[in-house]
Image (spheres, rainbow, N blue to C red):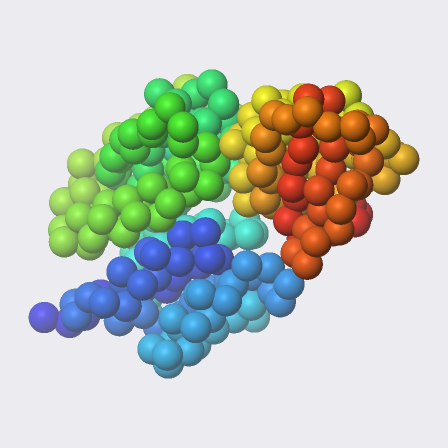
Length: 278
């Protein structure tokens, strides 16, 4: 039996899916599309290079579409790809997207902050047929993901990272069956990307609970911290504890090797690797 010829599109968020494809003896990954330099692609690039899979970084240009269409692709797997894919112009028998929510709830580029905040009922993975309308194609497979009360963005990411390849393996075991049984999503919800202001922690009036909650919600996306002098810095790691101190809230009270200690109203907060806000 001929191997299934697969093209993959995605960056490191769901790179576990590319690893799952490369482990299978019944598929041949013939192309990897990923983000340009400066984006999280290290794991995808490493996997592709070790398996000698051709890589294209950047937008799906006319030249990329032509290359894709010359490869005899059976299945396109998109998993956290940065760009909209012109699926109508691609010569692939099937095209599937890996989405980190239980569609039709949570269409959009990054549903995780919403999921950990107040939509835990929609936590899960959906494999859906790609369509011109964003995240609206027919559902092929779904799997809920359970969160504990203490789980935030980073913990949810790890659970999704583990669950996605299991669901993809199920699809690959009988692609024709699942596409023949696909079901329309119906009406759903679109959750837009959060703005910088929604990720903002104003340190001179913030309490420890505010810092902990904001970090739990945004995790690796990062929290934007505004200091007392109105400077803003980005950080993807926040640790905060309630404690008595004599510092002025919002000030940097120590500069450590990998971060700063910042005073809050009722405690201290460490922010790792602070970077100036763009």
